[in-house]
Length: 255
Ligand SMILES: NC(=O)c1ccc[n+]([C@@H]2O[C@H](COP(=O)([O-])OP(=O)(O)OC[C@H]3O[C@@H](n4cnc5c(N)ncnc54)[C@H](OP(=O)(O)O)[C@@H]3O)[C@@H](O)[C@H]2O)c1
Image (cartoon, rainbow, N blue to C red; front, side, top):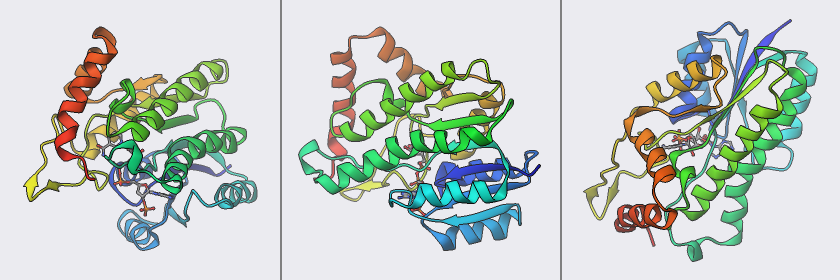
């Protein structure tokens, strides 16, 4: 039977790294999903024919149906689902209109939950779900409120799913990186380079996440900074942790 890995947000950042790593795994195809067809084709050019380009906007109503039909037709087993596509913007809550709120919740919350249900009937013992949450999920964050709340949804949802799946041999791993050098982050503010504390490259984050998923771990936290943020959120009062975050984020808020 054909085996596949499915990666959302494969055209850049962490998703590109997951696609690269999964091409080296024992799967027949890596389905690479994102809107940017050119970038996906370039990735296929680089990584080879194992990459199957599926250019689509996951927030469109028919996207999940298309993926479901594709899976049905292929009769493949899903060995990996990487729920990675995500959106973020730093700004005060009142600067988000309804369309942006809906789109962010759709991409960061609804689609990952739906995709688990789309793929689970095609998974078996040894299959792995990875959902890319964030260290932003450890506490509410002023000026990143929508993003942090959406990432908390992903973390809670995936941890609960991990427990529900415990007798199936399938696991669901929540991945919680700190800052990662990708296009999600803007680089400058008022002409000055933004200092993201503890920022890391995408490759090692993806590699650890995949290793943790293969070990069946519920959580994957890469690097000292994300571990520090997790401990801070566990040990300090929430209001204090939020004040620290607000102090760090406020100078970079785009109005
Ligand atoms: N960078 C960080 O500091 C950081 C930290 C913690 C967690 N994360 C999480 O890591 C994940 C990946 O982010 P990244 O940092 O690698 O960001 P990125 O470089 O901006 O990648 C985001 C990916 O999502 C895709 N995407 C965006 N909207 C989409 C849509 N409507 N339909 C389909 N695909 C869509 C983008 O491709 P197209 O534009 O081609 O569609 C792109 O491939 C996200 O869930 C993010 O929250 C990032």
